[in-house]
Length: 62
Figure (cartoon, rainbow, N blue to C red):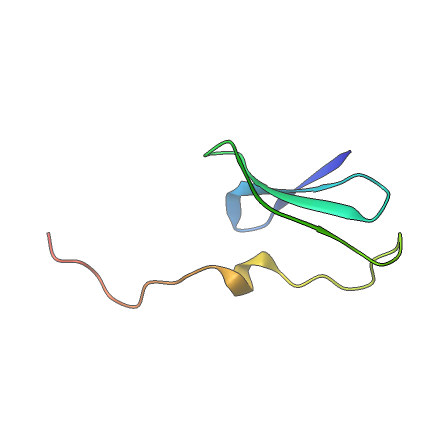
């Protein structure tokens, strides 16, 4: 299995087994976030994970 870190997200790692199956791991929490597969063994485009990350637009007063 190949592992690649996601830029700008230190705790997320993308794993690929070479047969079209991918998994997204959060290594900080030691948990599997998502598992998915591609129809063929080659992948031409992937969406950046940062598009799906929640962003806070406000701050919580202390």
